[in-house]
Length: 228
Ligand SMILES: [Zn+2]
Image 1 (cartoon, rainbow, N blue to C red):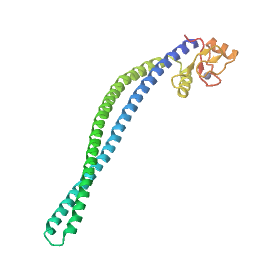
Image 2: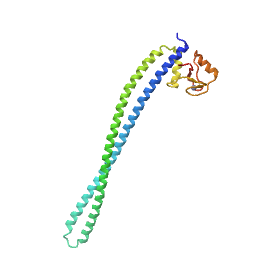
Image 3: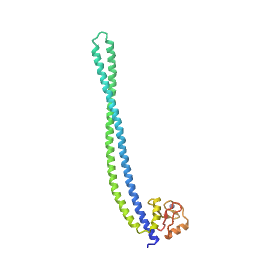
């Protein structure tokens, strides 16, 4: 049978394993969040590219319609220009053709800009996808590596727990549930080292004796001023 001080020492070892496992899980979560974020950025760019592409196609349709209208007006002029008295109508058609040709030039400029925009988005998507793939691969590797740490800690924890009396383990587990990775707290002069709540002398003396569980009255952590 171990002394209560030894039990406390074992609980500190247990907490060290818990801290390491929590850190490992956080590392996994952090990298997966980053990869998810980058993948969402790829999807957002793809939506943007689809919109830009639709805009580009609309401009091309507009340009084809403009060309057809030019052709129609040309044909009309050819039909009527030999007819006496058609000068005015021909001149009006020519005027329309001039205006359409100006519009056509402007439209070609828009089409070029739109095409460049689509191409830029395509290359942005490629770049973002490379980042996302790299991060996903990194997150996968991290998960494998950190999961091994978590598994090893679990094993070590089981072995360690077996050496702690059941009721003491219960006290630790309930405090650990409330404060993952910091169920035990040291005392720094007159304060709980974790929550900084003030502790009275009597409480500190009891905790220093290491013969019973003494809880911080502010955060309910297990106080252990004598821990190495
Ligand atoms: Zn406290």
